[in-house]
Amino acid sequence: MKTRSIKWKNYISYIIVGIIAIVFSVCSIAGGLPASTLYLLEKIAISVILAVSLSLVVGFLGELSLGHAGFMCVGAYIGGKVSVILSESLNMGTMNNPSVVNLLISLVVGGACAAICGIVIGLPALRLKGDYLAIVTLAFGEIVKSIFQNTKRETFGGALGLKTPRFDKDFLFIFAFALVLLTLFVIQNIIRSKHGRAITSIRDNEIAARATGINVTKYKLIGFTVSAFFAGIAGVLYSFSNYTVQSAKFGYNYSIEILVMVVLGGMGSINGSIIAATLITFLNTKLATVLTGDLAVLQNLLYALILILIVLYNNAPALASFRERYNFTNFIRKFYKPKHDPAKVQDDKASWDKIPTKIKMDAILSLDLSGKETLQREDDKGDE
Image (cartoon, rainbow, N blue to C red; front, side):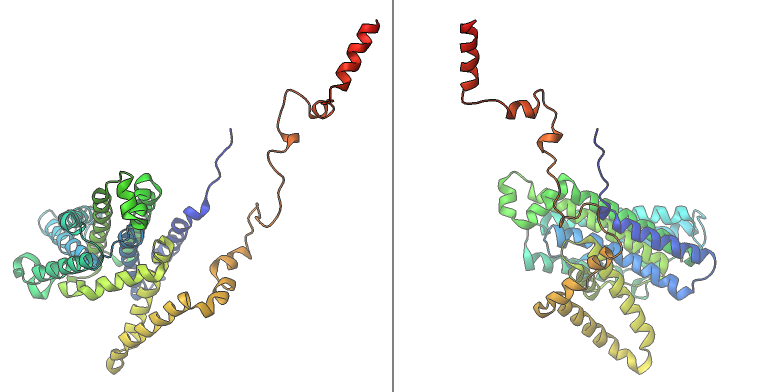
């Protein structure tokens, strides 16, 4: 029985994320990482979860959604409130050091609430297309932000924000990267399944997909709900990485920033979304650190200029030959060459000398198809 070869390209994202998590975990346990680096790793993991989950809707489903920050806001506030209740009432850790059980319960509750909001908003909204869907999802994000901002101080903190427990900095990014792996596992398995093929067919041609019997509304709702669930999980992680959750963080600018991560990494590219989310989060954090005081006004300007340069590099026709020559694939090929090189001509696996037959090929090729040999044998028998 022939064994199936492992397609390592399908697991490259898991391998890279796992290696990064292990290396930084060892450094953190050894006490070799400063607090700023730990916080940066937390932000990168949250951004990757947001970008990969939004890629399911924008990149693979082909729908423009600008309400991802709204789902994150629901997860942050609901998950943060659950963690406060668990810490104060059920003694699952303290506000400065909540327990792992507290974190897990808050993740499940926050993600589930965000998924429910995704279903409630998705049922009417996903019947819309293009700009209309973008407007509705953007309005949803602003409504959610306004609701939490105008609540009472005893419930969700009001305008001052909700005070939430802060998980241990040395270990929170480890849980965050584990959730990144979970997000990749779920999203990629959906994409490679029959449901993922149905989702991509809707993106390519919705009319043709509907004509072949695909339930377009059902698969749109599945993609929207799964994406909202992981956005809620990212919101819960955000609440555990900060002492206070404020609704101003989850405005439409943040939704656009998440969308930029998906577009910059390439529509329908999981690995590209991971790289873009990491790059954009790193740029934002470093610019905010370096440009302080009077130079803080230049942060958004430099950030925009860097994004413009990256977009021009990825799409400028004049740089096409340079991109093909100097890219990550060619760099990897210098160190690793596949066993089966397409450039080399290989023998045909169906050649005659490799196929078992009942009659030898020499016997078949030696037959006289003209019939002269048969007539000669009959004449010899007649003479006898």
